[in-house]
Image (cartoon, rainbow, N blue to C red; front, side, top):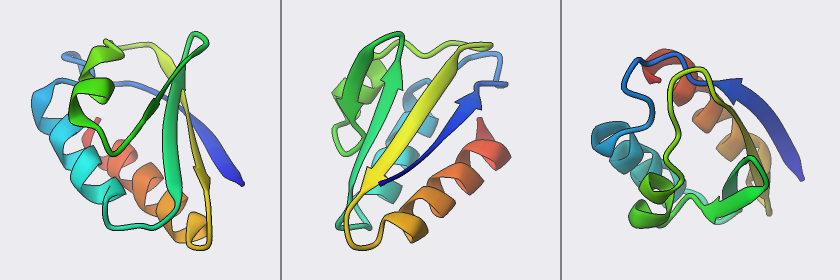
Length: 85
C-alpha cells in the first residue's frame, strides 16, 4: 500500500473537470485508488463519489493505492494533483 497527502491549491477545489480527469487517470491502473478527507473515503474510479466528497481549496486529502501497480498509480496521481489542482 502506498499513500500520500496533498493540500488542494486550486481556488475552485476539485470541481467537475479535474474530478473527471482524476477518474480517467485512476481507471488506467488495476490498483484500488481511494481518496480520504475528514474520515470519508471514496473510490477514485467513480466520478460522482469524487465530486460528492466536496473537496475545497485548502483541504488536505489522503490518496491511497493498493495493488500490483500501486507505485506507478500513486506517482501518476500525485503528479496530476501537483500540476493541476
